[in-house]
Image 1 (cartoon, rainbow, N blue to C red):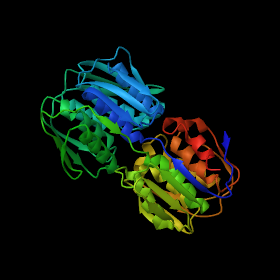
Image 2 (tube, rainbow, N blue to C red):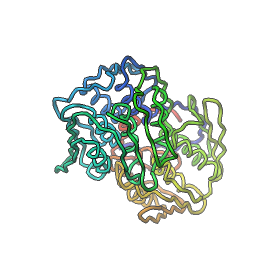
Image 3 (cartoon, rainbow, N blue to C red):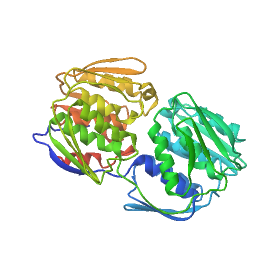
Image 4 (cartoon, rainbow, N blue to C red):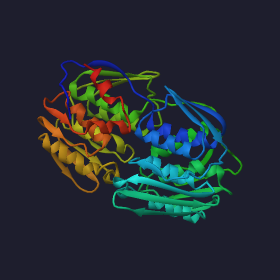
Length: 418
């Protein structure tokens, strides 16, 4: 349990670790390139450790040293692991490793924690089966098992749904240069979390592979193009920056984040526009952003493209005048926790009025009071509600160690604000 102390005056400069999304993708792609790549400023956390350790099990030489990773890709030639690979509660690791395992001649078994049984994977497995891969999942008492058996991967035309997870499309795109023939992907329905596909395509481009696309409906990769090793700089994580932007918003203070790309493809940079709409002042430099808190007002906002900052927005909205309507967030029920229910439960503990349905949430700003905040082993719940404690006395975060999933230095960074 960690009690958060209210802050009297906030005027801070902060640095945020590298992007989790870019780190995962750079690890996968550099492992497929042939030769030595250097990844600079990667995020080292539980989730990215799962991905890196799995690649080592696939035969990839990899050295993680301080603020960089040296990785020796084998040109798409990977070895089947001798034992099952555990990925904890990392949905990104499970989906991306499922995709890359389909390139391996042999059998791979991936194991996720119990919560993974509630997180989508079947759409990706179905797509792989259409590409001549034996792929299925099994629910055990305390885990989800995914089995992949392949003799190499056929390409062809694949139609896949977009409403469950954009990571299905990202996983297929990243392995596309190494299938036996041209891979074409058609997305049916409205794709959720679109910016994450943009991040995938951007990382692929940095390693020399161009994706042809028609918006978010159709993607293809030219035959014969493969990844080239390179030095790849990973920018700061926009999701993790959101907590400190929120801190400025609710305290009326000022936070500047250095080494931050205000024009990043990361969808969660859109949180800055949300804060502007709510009444904050945002100043964007070449490689920094500053948020100055103002009188916050409730808004109506579609968060389909920014699901990871919904908990941050929900907490911020609790300090705004009037109601905030957060729309198109139904897929948050399948994250590390059922985030819609979790957010509502904990805000109500603080005395905040909340209404929810399957795909939206209405939060009425009010006078919050202290509470013991259950995190549901969800890193984003812990970090979002910790920010409320900068204003509200008596906020205590239970299970605070869950931040290790994505931001191990969060508590140290938060303490530096005082």
